[in-house]
Amino acid sequence: AQSVTQLDSHVSVSEGTPVLLRCNYSSSYSPSLFWYVQHPNKGLQLLLKYTSAATLVKGINGFEAEFKKSETSFHLTKPSAHMSDAAEYFCVVRPQGTGNQFYFGTGTSLTVIP
Amino acid sequence: NAGVTQTPKFRVLKTGQSMTLLCAQDMNHEYMYWYRQDPGMGLRLIHYSVGEGTTAKGEVPDGYNVSRLKKQNFLLGLESAAPSQTSVYFCASSYRLAGGDEQFFGPGTRLTVL
Image (cartoon, rainbow over all chains, first blue to last red; front, side):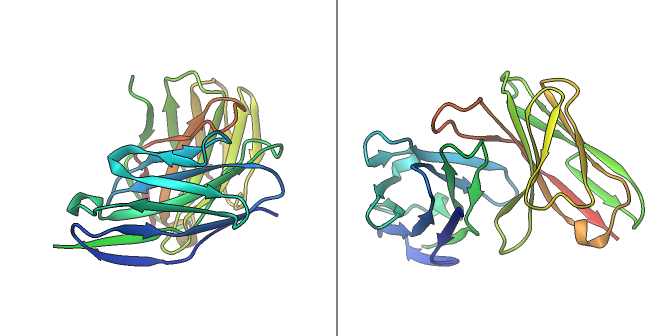
């Protein structure tokens, strides 16, 4: 069975401090992993993706994520939060060999305090 | 390129009414998807299509039907709307199976069923 767990439903950080959004997955096969961001009343935008190349993946807007197979984790980080980072973040897994279905976490709402 | 577009953006229905949501993509993607997003539940897959003329059920297909008569369009139908179908609906598309290709999302349709 495939599943994605986002460990925090809400994260609050001060502007200029680091961001850590946690994601664990379970997958029977080597997965592709994604982080999407959704700003209020908007669609989802891809931040970054892991596709079995480098385990440290850099995305847009200064975000990056590290794939750790031993921990089945794909946590999203950013060194310094900006007010514009306030949004909902979704971790998504696409297991290989199981068709083209994507499995979404329940989301983490990021608040940035000025 | 317009990417993925959805019509309408907003709709209010009465219980028992029917409607069709239209999704269109101009990226020549083989795969298309319909999701619903509800608070605290992430995105859940309703139906998807792996090519023109084919459709398949996702996680929550009951009460919905779909059609993919043209490669660029994917229609989601509600034959008899119920208040439980109040949600935000997102369409997405992706290339056919090519390790890690991400989904591209439309802006969403906010549906309220009274």
